[in-house]
Amino acid sequence: MGHLKKLSFLLFLLAVPTVCGAITPEHTVEKENINALAFTQDSIRWADYYYNIQRYEEAISLFKSGLEKGGVDSPKFLKKLALSEAGLGNGANAVDYLETYLFEEFEIGFLNHEGFDGIRETNEFQALLKKYRPRTNFWSFFYLFIGFIGFYTVLLLNLNKKIKLFAKLLISGFILIHSIFILHIALVVTNYQYEYPHSYLMSTCFSFLYGPFLYLYFKKVVRNHSFKYRDLLHLTPTLLFLVYVVPVYARGANEKLDIMLSRVRDGLNPSDSEQLVIIVILKLVSLLIYGYFIRKLYLESSKKTKGNTPIKAWQKNLYHIHFLYIAAYAVYGILISNSISSGFFYHFQIGSMALMVLYIGYSANLQPQVFNGILAYSNRLFPKYEKSGLTTSLSIELKTHLEHLFQNEKIYKENDINLEMVAERLNTSRHNASQVINEHFKVSFHELVNKYRIDEAKKMLLNDKGRNLNIIDIAYEVGYNNKVTFNKAFKKDTELTPSQFQRKVPQLHA
Image (cartoon, rainbow, N blue to C red; front, side, top):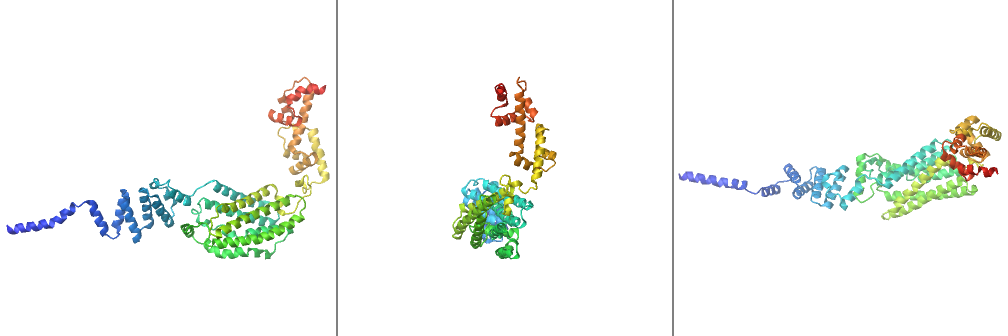
């Protein structure tokens, strides 16, 4: 019996720790285990467990510990840390973890996670969105529009066979590098450079071509310079620069993205080169040197060109816009070199480039003859017809035939009459028909048709002493399709409407 009591007492002593452990509060056990364990797979599960039940403080402690110890899925931990801090309403901390996550794994769609809804309107989160998420605004659409206008202009210039080849290649190359630069800026201001990493430095390789292209163009149109192989020496700075920049272009998309993000981490513009200041200074030197020679050619051309000709106006505007760009770039370069934010002047230099693109595009559409730099005509009244090939005798013959068509055959009464139909009746080209009308009648084709129609209408009204004719019938008879157009043309000629003229007919006869 004594032995039995002793055995029972021993069993009781052994059972006490187990029972006490079973009734220890759960939270106490968990903390003891966490403190005792190294950061193992179990700890990761505990971190996820706390995160899932929204005990974010415990989850943050474990996730941070995991990052410090290393050997874990860093992007996953950073995402969970960002979401945990957001769950606690700590916007600044959440944004710090978010940005670190983007540096490691650039998944911009993660910013749309519903877990950030609570901090989405904070200044820190909005700044992060502005810095990385693709966005559009007026300026992005404007730059994109200008870029495509530039590409269209390049195509238009190269399809124009009347522009001399060398002048065409130079001015189209000049506008092409402007367009690529502006398109590059459009990607930068919209943050699409991160979506298309190969756009990194895509326009930088043209930095030393602006001056040479415009200088050689002026040399061609002012002095009728013929291309020589030594002209290729102007490409030397660009070729040397390519030796430096091509290895960067050859890198993969992820490498270029890492370069851009590392520049952002350092508080710099992601789209710029590490040697930005050096490139800016060298480009400015190039612009100033070539600007000096361009000015000499421009002044030489101004002395040669007498009067206010289209050629002179074209060269003057081209010259001034380019020097506006040089001035804007000089200020931008000085600010950048002294680590001062360029702000307004960054966009002002782009604006001057856009002005150049628009002006050359306008000229390419409306007065392409100016690109050759020499006047292709001397006829001041009708310059576009000077070299049309229409001889004086043929012009007089066509004039006589045209008068017959209008006075005898009265073709103006045909309501679908147009210049092509008249040219076909004259057995000549549309161009020649237009020239004959402009030179001999001093009016446009439509003005000539209206003149004959209104004269015919006035005759009909004057002969209608009893006022029996309806105005609309007269309009149809002389070739108009509606009364409104007829009334407008009639009043322009007589300062009276057809009805007013009709009422005055008796007085006119008297």
